[in-house]
Structure formats: structure tokens, C-alpha cells
Length: 70
Image 1 (cartoon, rainbow, N blue to C red):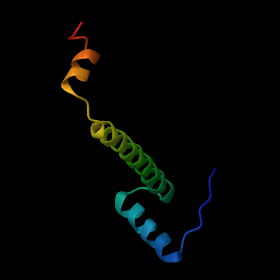
Image 2 (cartoon, rainbow, N blue to C red; image 1 turned 90 degrees about the horizontal axis):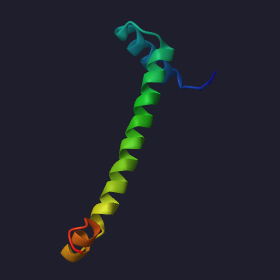
Image 3 (cartoon, one colour; image 1 turned 135 degrees about the vertical axis):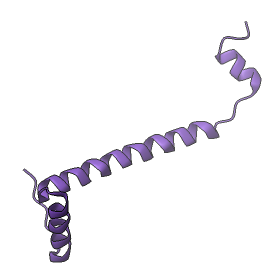
């Protein structure tokens, strides 16, 4: 169980969204949290990939790493 305090305006918007989707408040919040966590994971992976791409290697280094040069 997890409790969150919301402003009345946010609570009303959340209830409206749940009604439109034919769902309930908990399901909408759960979906939003899962989406947030996935987005943060994607961002973290993108940052890692960007860092790896910034590391420059010479052709000689790449050939050696790939086992193309003896």
C-alpha cells in the first residue's frame, strides 16, 4: 500500500481521466508510475550510449579489439 497526497485540482483531473478511460484512480496512477519508470530507464540507457559514443578510438584500436589484427 502506498499513499500520496494530491492537490484537489490534480485529484479532480485524475478522477476525470479515470472516468474517461473507464478505469479507476489507482489504475491510472499505477500506469503513470510505470511509464515514468520506463522513461527514466530509457533516459539512463541513452546517456550511457552517448558516453560510449564520445569515446573515440583509432581504426587500429578497433581492429585489435575485434581481433582483426594478430
